[in-house]
Length: 581
Ligand code: GAL
Image 1 (cartoon, helix red, strand yellow):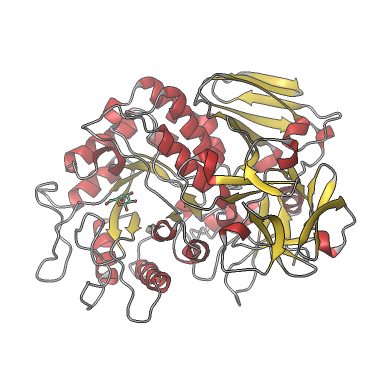
Image 2: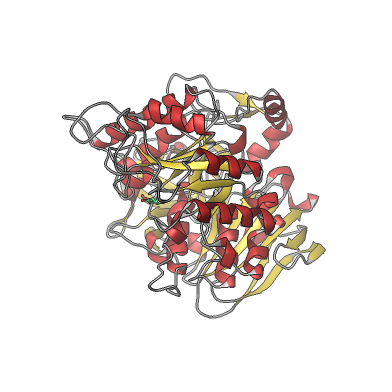
């Protein structure tokens, strides 16, 4: 048990070296588990790939999801405009471009594959116009290419396109989770994306309880069909912008391996083929980045499809999407017409060095080190003591950036690092500065290996909360906590730079955030309880002294108040923080 309730990466690294990293388990009453890298190996060899950390009693182990899933899905390019041939052509393209050998292996058919009604025996029926020979031969052909096959269904009475759903019929009656799961297993399905349209709560039941019951039922059905099927849950996306969002994000990992938390990424529109789509990439990045505490190897936040390489995104924007998704350890599910993606874009999407950042075994979310109106600096801790650093230029003009060890949370004196620019491949064996010229909407990304003199990095970065109202862009979605006593549009100022101590102090400019009876002051750090904060999975910062929650109001400034149910003003995202109990 970590008495302070905090587990930061610096500490986690040391624990890993001794093979005894302890894990947080979200379900009350379930015993904590211990694990190590060695543990992962043993379990995979034994055919039972249980992720060593964050496995819950009911989360279903699956060797394929110890790393974020990678593949292709038709939706963002074709929506319902596809046939079996479209799917197979794209599957072949994955192989011939070399993308499959780089990890993009799961080919998923999205909505519209079936008829609106079931047959007289209650079975789902593939649309005979799209799949004249049924579904099985398509799946066999995908498998013959050395790929995995995924399918789409819905937890409600009908899919979002109003085709037959697996959930309870509108007017009551029996759900079809087990029958459909059996059918999928008999076809050889490896991955199920279960959407959440048309889920209806029963009398006196909350929406959240209705979703939970449906996703639990699917999870139980999948466990009974004798075939490992990766379970991708869309439930959280139906609660975005509500307090229940955080509750749903807490239970989804008991049932599946990845989950969509929010709005769809912009789809290709054949009527407006060149319509820009980068704003949508920025929005999905914005809402995914603050949710790192919910993911860990085996369970992934899904920021939605990679549309890089398709119309509406430039090469610079394609680099940004892949780099940002990789910094977030997000699933990489391409959704474009691969036959038309340029060789230059294929080279970006297949960049092994960047993909290795995504697939890093620690599965961390990047920390937002600094956000200004024009650029973001991110740092992601990697296995083996390396870090990845990325700088996104959101602005319209080129950006010249120079970062030294101190900017990344290391001691400035005596700290140098070996660095590799992952786009150009340029290496420097010893440098104290990362430097790049970054075009508008482009992202620079490096892997660095800090020298021994650097010591452990401080968990340094911005502390953010989600702004009130409905904002749909990276700039206004998050507010930064400032040591001036405000929450404000992030400016990148020194007052927005915090480090979080292992005991739970929030430090900025060498002073600690102190709860003086509900009033917040920056004072000399003494480790007294009014300066110690416990971080919860939902995202509250609870003061150890008076048990009030850190509250950042746009109008009233920063105070400590009674904790409410997942109030936006009380949910925080912290640098490198992981939650321990
Ligand atoms: C949405 C989902 C999309 C796609 C679509 C199909 O709810 O987010 O990714 O699956 O439904 O109708």
